[in-house]
Every structure is written in C-alpha cells, then in structure tokens.
Image: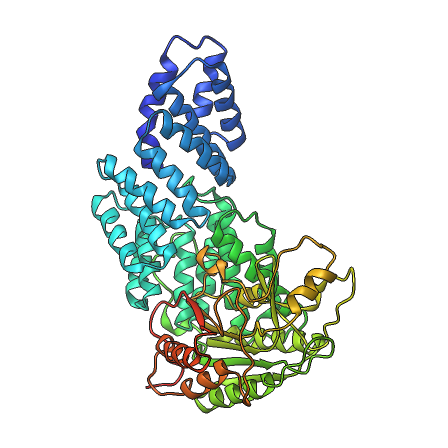
Length: 567
C-alpha cells in the first residue's frame, strides 16, 4: 500500500505549505498525512482539520483519505469505507479506490472490493499495488487462476514485492502446486528476510509436506521478527501477523504430539486483537483446539522443539536430514445418527442411515468414529474426540442424520435428550456446527460435511417458544454456510452438503433409509467418482424419488478434485 499512499503525498506537501493555515494549526498537517503517525493521532489531526472547514474539493478529499488510513490502522473498516467514499465523492483517485477496496476485502466483501480495484485500474496508470490487491480479492473468492494472473502483473510492473511473490505462492499451494508455492515463498523471503508473513506461509507448506521441524523453525522465526518490529505494510491488520504465526506453530506442535507447547501457542494466539477475516478464523480455530487439548493429559513429546533459526539465515530451508516427517494421508470420518428422541418426535431412519454411511466409508478406507442415538454428553464427547483425532488427517468427513435447527443463522445438531423448558438456553444443549468447522479448520486438510438433518419436525417452534430470547430468529431448516463466503474458513477445501436446500425441511422417507442417505450410500463408494459429481448424482436421485419435494444442496470451497473412493 505504501506506493499508492505516496501518490497523495505530493498533494499533502503542497497542502500544508499553503498560507491558509497559520500556526499552530499547520502543525496538524504532517500529523494527518504522514503514514508513520500513530493511528489515534492521525485520526485526531485529520478530524480537527475537517472541522476547520477551510478546504474543499481535492484538498478536502486528501484529508478524508488520510483519516481513512488512520481508521485502517485501527482495523475499523466501516469508517475506512465511509471516509474513503467521501474522498472519492470529492475527488476520485486511484489511492482512494484502492484503500476502499482493501477495506471491503478485509470485511470479506470480495465482489465490491474487485469493483473498486477495477475502477482504480481504469483511472490508470497501472499500479502494481492495485493488481496485487485485486489478486487478493480473487484469492478470497477462490478464483486462484485469476489471482495468479494479477500477481503476475504486479510482479512484472515492479519493483519486486515480497508480498506479491508470497500471495502468488499461496494461490499455487491452493491449486496443489506445492513445489511452485515453495519457490515463490523462498523468493519472497529472499527479497525481504525481515518479513514474518512469508515464513509463516512457508511453514504451512512444510506442514503439508509433513516436515514439522521446518514448519516450527519458520514460525518461530516469524514470531521473533513480528515482535522485533511493526508490520512494514500499514495495510496489515493489527495483530494478525502474530495470531497467524502462533496458530500455525501450534498446529505443528499438536501434529508432533507436543501438546504443552501447542496449548501455549493457541492461548497466545487468542490474546491478539483480531480484526480481519483471516485472524478471526485463526482465533476461532485456536479457541476450539485449545479447549480440546486442555481435556487431555499431555504425552511426552516425540522430540524437542526445533530451535529458532538465527537472524539472516531463513532464506534457505534447514537440511533435509533435520526435518521430522509425519503422515498426513490419514482419512477419518465422524458418523452420527440420532433418531430416538425423548421429548420431540422420534425419527425411525437416522440410525439406519448412519450405519449404512459408516459401513460405506469403512469399505473405502476411512477410520470411522460412529455414534447412534447420542445424548448431549455422549454427543459432545464423540465430536470432541473426533476433532482431536482429525489433527493429523488429510481428509475429514462428517455425516449427521437426525434433527437439526437454525438459530440466528447458526446451525445446531440436536442430541436425543434435549428437553424444552421455558426460559432455558436451548442452544447450549445442542451442538453448534460453527464450532465443529472451527475445530477442523486447517490449511492442509480437506473437510466434507454432510448433513441429513432439518427433518420435518416441531423443533424450530419449540426452540423459539422456550428460549430465553423470545425475539430470536429460528428457522425450520438449516442455514446456508455464510462463513465460507466471508473467508473465515481457511481450510485447504471445505464442502458442506445438505439433504435439502437452506431453510427447507428434508423427508425421513418411508423405507429403512431417508431418500438422501439411500442415494448417498449407493454412490459414496463408487471408485473414481469425484465428490461433487457424486453429489450431483445423489441430487438427481433424491429429486426423482421425492417428486421434486426435496432438492439436496451444497456449498463448496474445494480447491480441486476430491475422490473419497480411489480410482
């Protein structure tokens, strides 16, 4: 972002040399328009200048732009957008469009961000930073090919940017090109070995390759660098660098079995101030995993922690002989069927559905944790045990059949002993899907979640009538997974499949299985059938079997083709 801000620096210099501001007022100018000014001082100085009502047009637009920069330092993206919009109204510039687009990006509103970056590029001339930022937005949308094309443009325009090399590497990793990603990350580190972010991202690649020693060494050095100086790029959200580094090192420690260090790093990650979608996702993951590990007695670590590399030596990876490798090819599944409800309408088929799916998954090589008719305590334990086991998994599948409900846009799975009492906090007695997703969130794992829930039942009405908040928004079906679209799930790829469309109810069926699980059982074990193609076949069968009353639905951020049964 520095290059774009310097475009307005010349205007700012001319502005404060004008005689219209007499002492001491002209001291406000440098405080407002210097990017190294602390955020609160910058905002205060710019606000006082606006209050003087001495400027209009281009000059006033400059003041609003710099106040937006101050709000960006604080991570207040709503105020960034408001001030940048006022700057654009008064006098549209490339930096103002770029800054507003960056704020929309940080809020997860990628389409609006791309529109702003497009406007910036139309105003010209081509700016390296704008191509870079638009690449970030394409990456947020999961369009990695377009992201790589924009990073290419940014790199070609020069001067060399470590962040463009780094983010192109992240995009290549998302497409499965680990070697290309590693080459780009190494170049980013060569360009600027003082940056912590490329080291953290290289650690993710090492972990994907199973090299935990290297992953820990890189994140340790990233933490040291992040503590040594403030982020070089003022667009970097406060605290996000350390949150990411601690979270990634914790995942490496956990995979190695060093639970004490993993818990410490997760706890430290939670201490940071998260403002962007990525750091919020890291903290959500850290919170769940810290809770999971806190319930376990820590085993002895298999080896001591890797020492932090000396400053200036991080451009080259450690020698191969020093790297510990772990298997990440493990495929695990959690299968739950709840039908024997005590206080709401029982369902005859979920237990049959779960047993059928569990057998199909075992037949194709999954390690399956199975639960039938689980009460609240058993359901919580089963899910949390599974999340711990998934720490070293490359693919994780979750299948649930039974009652489900959405409350305030969040999806909950219902244990069989839920009892509705006036004034009770019903959501505390159910299992929050967001918690399960956060526990599985990992940039090196593929997650498949299949929900044959939202069966036609009085669940929604009962939750709404007995909850402590009578104004709560309770739906009869399950809600669409908005978290994936907002970028708060960072995994290597997540697919959520519903037995029916969001907000709709599914049929339990007249046979031994629900229409959805019957079709799923027929196709889930088909060798060489890509998972989204499998779900297309399942959808067609369910629509035909229910005469159009039930239409299965899915939302995917998968980064490539996924096969549950090998070709």
